[in-house]
Length: 250
Ligand code: OAD
Image 1 (cartoon, rainbow, N blue to C red):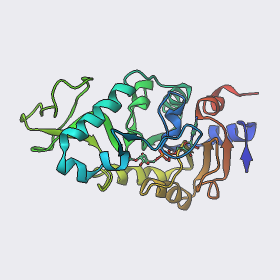
Image 2: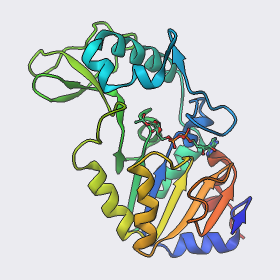
Image 3: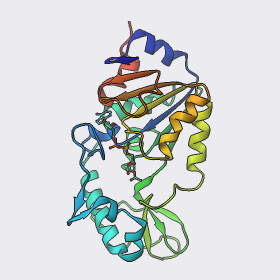
Image 4: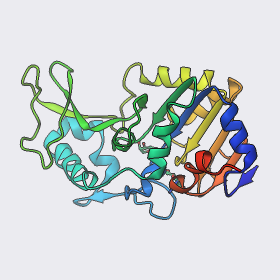
């Protein structure tokens, strides 16, 4: 079923759910001014200093030129620090207290869910405001922007660090995907919001949810590869559609 607004039937499904899991992607931050990777009008497959993003954000580049990788992330942090959560982020933060179990799984590294107040957050691809020590593997907040030091030094052992994000060519942080999969499998309602759902393993989560018996509601201005799996696709922007689950009541 394809809708363009939240109907009474959807609100009933929402209100009856006990175990809810949500997967978000770049689209949930689009209305905050974060460019998406692949769709939704403002998509920008960035290049910077003449190099494609896929090269700058890669494990290979980290091994050959870690200074450049930090410069690239410093640039992105400079753009992100000016941005704020939008009504979609705030709606999801509010949903957290409404259900017996609620898991917010995000592919975004921008920290806007946390800024909106979400607490039970599974960040599949890491967080741009965190660094990870290359010597002792400690992770620590590194919020200074622009960076005072490249690379930021570990607060525990003084070693050099890297951005605590998943780079192309790397696998997801240990444990986080398993927890996301568990939340997806036990969900009775699973939302897929603002993601093209083509990047694995994140894209397998709606499938795990469906196999576990969940209803799938997708929120996206465009149909995606997941639409065929979804019970309902609500065509629209996250910042406009998500608040309706709480405000659009007869
Ligand atoms: P994509 O850029 O692939 O997809 C963004 C989706 O958001 C598209 O389907 C758009 O139609 C949709 N969209 C745009 N504006 C929207 C809005 N206002 N409300 C709701 N949806 C909107 O982004 P992701 O699926 O997040 O990985 O990409 C997944 C991963 O690919 C990223 O995490 C990143 C990238 O490689 C890493 O960096 C490891």
